Amino acid sequence: MVFKYIILGMLVLILISLGKALFHLSSAREDDGKKMVAALAWRIGLSVALFVLLIVAYYNGWIDPQHVSPAHSQ
Image 1 (cartoon, rainbow, N blue to C red):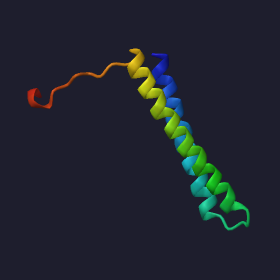
Image 2: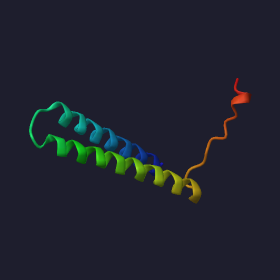
Image 3: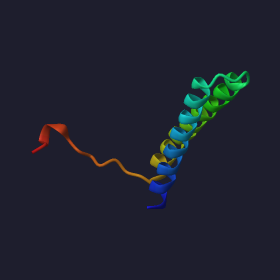
Image 4: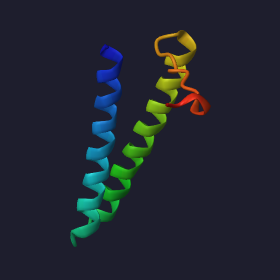
């Protein structure tokens, strides 16, 4: 259950970083280009970290696939 909150927290942080980059893209100050690149770099880093966390969690047995077969859907 705690793992779901960690995943949701990371997704929220990714969205916040993306929104921050959008804000800096639309503003016209001189140093906003560097801030936008930094926000996008954080987003990429968080996304990679989330992906690695999901892979580690799967291999350690912390999460399981639901094993839903599309051929047997009702």
